[in-house]
Length: 489
View 1: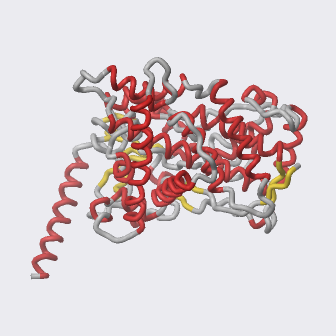
View 2 (view 1 turned 90 degrees about the vertical axis):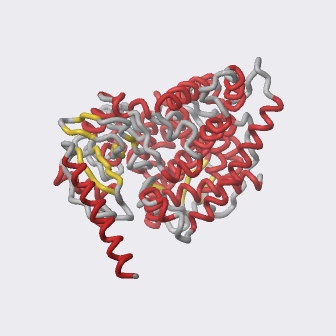
């Protein structure tokens, strides 16, 4: 019996491989290494830093390559010129978003994150306009961030010994999103709030681990295997229950003439379209979009600021130079605002370099070919996963003088003035670029400058104990946790 089962499996694998090869011959695909049956090119990719393996392969196969992750065909775009040509110059061909199994598990396929077509267009347009109405990138949002920075500084002043800033920064960044979405902030001691942030952190860490990568490639198999993902998925229900409770509270108190936040605006729009059978403004999309904003708006910005503190401890001279510039322009009594950025070129350059060097989403969010796409003489078949390798853009040797070194001079001209670089794309580019980009830029500038006004940061083991190599490197580059010392100035 076992012999026949083995024979059947071998036959199925062989059939799959034959059909895959036959299908590949129909198209003029970009070059790439030959895949193995069933597992594709997985064995050729470093599980700890997969994006570096892809960058190395591009030296052989060029800036447009074909890989197979399991039986999922993937086209990888490498380098600034290639990524820009795809996402900006051929933007309409690359608007598709891949149906990432892990994100699908969290949002059930609804919301702005992994939707496509008319659903994505309507939700993105609505989300951008609503967030702008509530001040994203404007004075109103700036005041929210300034107010939250006061809570953060007061909390740090209470620490009399070395502390891990991870949870504190998660609370801070999440509160900005909570003001936008729920119309309220939460106390840093709120146990339910802390519990939810812990679930989000666990989810992002899993997604950035080798096991998370395997789940996105073989979800059906991983569902049958034991592991921490089952515990994390069970806890996601807690976030779902919390968000649905907040939505229900809003349903009972919403005033159509005076919306308080994102949820109110969505509910008002849903009521306006209640007789439209094809409306995208329904409960599933509201929950999915709130989850997208809540998760993305918490972990990425929090991790970037945490990494910034590690960089400033590691490079004491840079921290001191930023403080000198901040003291001379703003002083220590006034809260910084976005207008100050023009007068703080060195500080602005350091913040940009922190984002470039961390490279927090090296793969970007994978795109998807919704139909056959012609690109650079190749055909990318419908159903192909497309990875614009942001790592290769932020570390492009043609665009950066010292791509693998931390160097604020990348964003300064010879006179010390801030200079832009078109290859600075930490938020991706094109029509699927991050909807919260202007909010994140504002948060990073105001929080980092505010912290340096009040504190000098060191660590118990000294600068040499700081390790800037990320702890997790896959979907996201998540920095290591360090205990730090915040000495009031």
